Image (cartoon, rainbow over all chains, first blue to last red; front, side, top):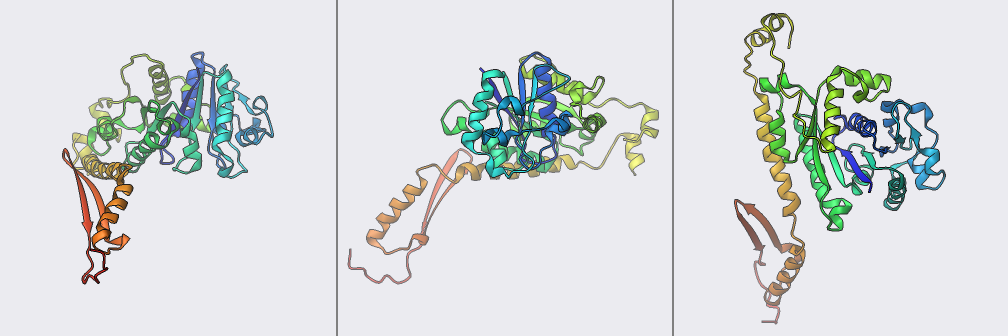
Length: 270
Length: 93
């Protein structure tokens, strides 16, 4: 039975697409047939982050409207086997995303995939609501910053009231916190919300902490999901996150600051 | 100042605590709003109460306010009816 996972946040720019790309890639790396869908109609970017922007021919809306079939629109990842990308439409408006259409496409995908990752757009409008409506589980991407935490709480409210599971009285969407762009030194110094602070406010289980890292920008420049970057903190953190999602019990890394030596404090800056 | 703070590993800047406090307040408020905007029976309750009151006093739809609040372990149902200043006797008693 396929599992539908939405990657959502409310606020923009917190790392939804980065997380979707690495999470889906990680699941596929571990042998699961995985598809990642871009729900950001009009502002698609997952294709760029995945490095397949020049291979987009048909998109999600084309399939909903019956202008193409799934096999024509799905882009097969060239690095990881059993990973497919379904891009959003760049030209249509988000009204084209109908509940019936989305449901039909998801049901078709469930025939051939084990995990369906839905990359939500920012905001709480149609695209975002459609991305979360059919979800079984949710990765709520949050930055340790007031507006992001507040928006995440709002999204949790919507998951609990406006998802299909909520409307049909089924068991609720399983929520996971992904705390991204975390800087342990700043949290230690008291000028950034700590992991514990965010957990206390949002009250959902922590799936992973992704450290603020230069590798994220570098890998997006190159169109390679950061999880594939060997030796990067953020990539390793995403690897742990995927393993935890699949049931491994791993301790959280990258949540405590490296002790700095005397000279580094003096010259190394913060 | 920056170098000084950095060197001794101390900082007077504890803005995270302030952020947490502000968030806890606003998030609690917004969650309250989500649920407090109503158990499903609230609109019906309001309508029926209004009908009962109208049997005796002519009040307008806008003159009745039903408010549900949570405090500690209690839920407070507040009912506020503004009676008209001078009742023109409506004949019905």
